Amino acid sequence: MRIEGGTPLQGCVRISGAKNAVLPILMATLLAAGEHRICNVPRLRDVETSMRLLQELGARVEREGDVLVVDTTSATGEEAPYELVKTMRASFLVLGPLLARFGYARVSLPGGCAIGARPVDLHLKGLRAMGADIKIEHGYVVARSKRLRGAHLYMDLVTVTGTENLMMAAVTAEGTTVIENAAREPEVVNLAEALNRMGARVQGAGSSTITIEGVSALRPSVQEVIPDRIECGTFMAAAAITGGDVRIEGCIPQHLQAVITKLRESGVWIETGDTWIRVRGEGRLRGVDVITMPYPGFPTDMQAQMMACMTLAHGHSVITETVFENRFMHVAELQRMGADLTIDGHSVLVRGVERLSGAPVMATDLRASASLILAGLAAQGETVLSRIYHIDRGYERIEEKLARLGAKIWRER
Image (cartoon, rainbow, N blue to C red):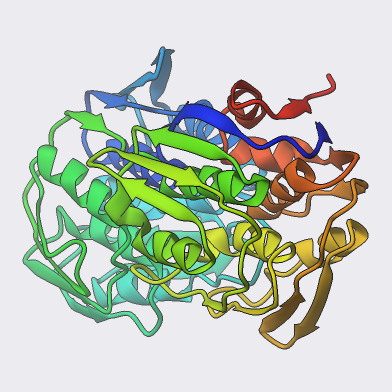
């Protein structure tokens, strides 16, 4: 990706469906035999990986524009192979649905972005409490259960995928399951709504306690994926760092309150409606401190983008990462562009500089890619970003959307 910096972004952009919402909804189709329809599905590498995984498990998957048609009639619970699961951590979400429907699952231990260990022990602990027999064999989780039973589960750490996996496993379990210290993210709520449209009885999603009353069977349905709040936040940051004026449409502003608050604190003008946000940069940003937290706190998936903004802010900022232990790999690349950054444990001290300079940089993970694109949009000269396959995991045609806002950005084939 080549970026010629220095152009304030202007115009309107529409947000795509949320990567982190569509993936668990796709896995949930395994719970009920028949034809499912999922609407507002973005064209992303992670979605393509999920489609291949479902096909590997015997499902038929077809795309009709932004709609995925998934027929799970012939799906089996045989194996989710390492070759697919290693590239995307969310693939591990097939474990709960396969175990619930077939009583057996063999799923590779997961991979994904190299931003931290993110162990799956909480998933397995919860499934064992629901009566599953689980073994780790040759890098695979092998799980068996005639029928899962409801249990009272407490999550030692807030985990989105753990909450989602156990929620899907519990919908056809015998009795009632209660998940305490559950993740509260909008994507968890979207999954709960999808499960309820399939006939499940899930209550409390969006709070720290979710209650699932098991039913005997689910049915196929039509689902709608929520807008991607992280894509929205990234375009908000792009408008702020370039001093632009951008209207972002097809979003849900209440999903971004922490980001809106911090950008306003840094001097950005923001106006919101029911489904849109307008962001206008007004002069140089002011340094603000940020601490990432589970929802509704400041999202870890916006940490790198906010750091890019703070590299050009007046004064000092401290960015503290509490969710993942290895999510500062973009720091070295931002330093190549002239950013003044110092890592101190789980925090980065950001001393704002007058300007960044375009440079060759390398993407290390999905959100790091976004931060480097933002820095390139504001830098003097040309930035060349390599390993852009990371960005394609979570942003739909980001260079085309930015170009329509006036950015000088293009992809070299």
